[in-house]
Length: 583
Picture 1 (cartoon, rainbow, N blue to C red):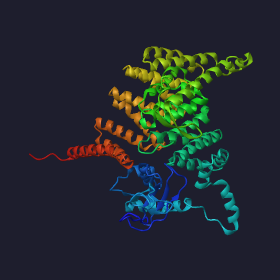
Picture 2: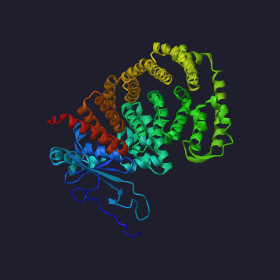
Picture 3: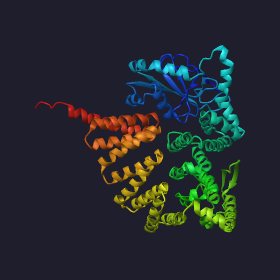
């Protein structure tokens, strides 16, 4: 044992009283945390990963306010509440390891985030919190006579984390699906397993969660849709870990392409985050293996550019994904990589294996040849089968898909005018047959091309149309993306007043999605516009809320920038309110 090494029992940082082990509290909101309440009125949240401290602190604040979100957003740190953080917490042993590891050297990553409201606010909320905690953090009291029957009934409909973890470890998809059909919290418990430090166990969680979500989506698409959006927004949140999130989104789409295929473009939209690129490529390969058109109809040509990446994991995954899709357009580029002996780790859907870029390139070329032969066999299908296929999809739409792919190729080659002409040619066809999702995609691409060519004003119309369709389809993720693009146009044109209602609509949506990062960004943008309008007090209100969110999520630089700006504005406001000096 190292000299000076100590282990502490958990105590409240405000009153030094011993703390009870935190408990699960249903329903959970922002993340998979455990909760606790000290007798002094402080509340705390446990994050087992230690990676989601920003989200945990925001969750603790909301918990302290008894889910009164309006109140939580109005509170100021230091004035209305105090916060504290204890790291190195092991929930299993209920001990604090200040060194960050136990006696055997195992890392202890857990953290406890504390909030203690000021006396007057705490008095108003304390009873409601304690009643809710005591009611929901443990099974309800059962009379002795009914205990046996009720426990048996409860046992059928609720499943422990250990039971879920065991079924995932054994890849028992049938059992997990049955469990999730009775207890939707099984999905959240499976999601927690994505944080497993063991890659093989994490991959099991990815495959099983995608399979279970796909299986129950037909009966409960709303629950699975919420899960998918949480995962996608976690992948966007730089303040949180996104281990396994992108891959799981891909698996859900692979299992339910009809319901969630529109999310493919959102996965590809994350390519700007370099650490996430192998996960994005893996998801594209898994989806494209079964539904190549779904991947091709998105901006999948961006994958071609990644074949020359310096990172072998990126090159290798790009080759693998294009092979899964059967992208024969990349045959020449992949052929030039068959001698690339750089190594990387690849999960093939069953196991993680060490391989080389060249070996994967040879497999991809072989797969492309097999797909080519399959296509030739499909062309020999009977006249009756052809007639049945044509009844399912109008011939005009089939032709439009071909033109769509041509337009994508032209766009990625830099032939923007030719691409625009192709997109405009098929826009009316998709519109006529009611393919609204495709209309929205084409409008977004047309807007992107206009922006790329510097024709900012011309981009407004297609972006607005895409936005209207996303709103109509009640797709908040896509709606936020389109709102951001419209906001950027107005900013470029310096028409800030016109951007304001779009900021407020976007803020409303991301608050509903519990996206703290984007909430802070939109609040800062609203503050900028108010400041330009001379509404200094309104600007300060928006900036302070944004600063609080940035600080709570650990974005220290952004918070510091806002703090400096707030100080300048407060000084200016004080000077304007000061009485004129006597001469």
